[in-house]
Length: 287
Image (cartoon, rainbow, N blue to C red; front, side, top):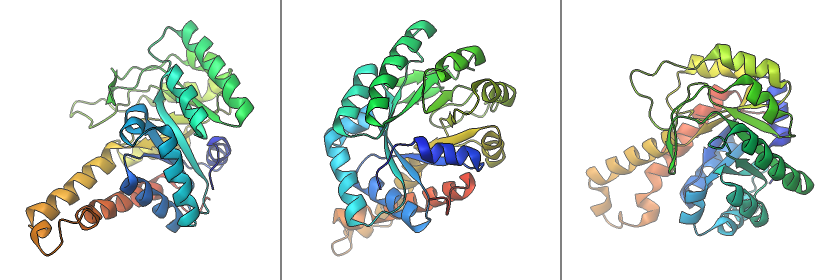
């Protein structure tokens, strides 16, 4: 069932687990993630960047595909379609298209403008029952052209944003998108703890979930993180499985070139990765 992310994250924070946001890039991605959620009775958030939305034919196409799959695959668990790192204009377009959750990433603005624009998005979203994620302190690395240096957010700025009625808050704590470099210092748990204390009951979001050691993930959840974003890891396992299929020459056997066969190993690899993450996040049987 298609819902906003608000209630599932409030429940996750109370019960000390996290809901995974798994970004979708095409039909295979979407189907793999939805089926894995159903099989493991786990709530799920389908993340869609503006670039991925454009790639898939537009926001309305994405919503139509997800709604169709929910109905025809009998997906009974809570599902949110969430705009990832949305611009001010992008967030409004996603809401108009039927997204049930949006992230407005105002982290590249100064705090006053971030507050003003976030407040406006929250007002529009609240009237429509749509959940809103805001960000303070840019997340490191690059995601879909959005580049961040891995800042550590100011807890006071987090407090200001959290008081605007947002459903969830992404705060930079040294995490980055993509692969983590060997000299990465790890997550700043002192700052996370302070942000968690100062923002009260607002669920926190951890971006860049690929490559963070399991013990750090568990500690972050214990400190109020209720949503963890995963994208790169699914991309890597999909690519690895597809490469293996082709290197073994299976695309040259019979009708192995059929995209339904060619993409099947990658599809199964995504399912495996998503299940592993759901086990780590503790969301299995929480739907």
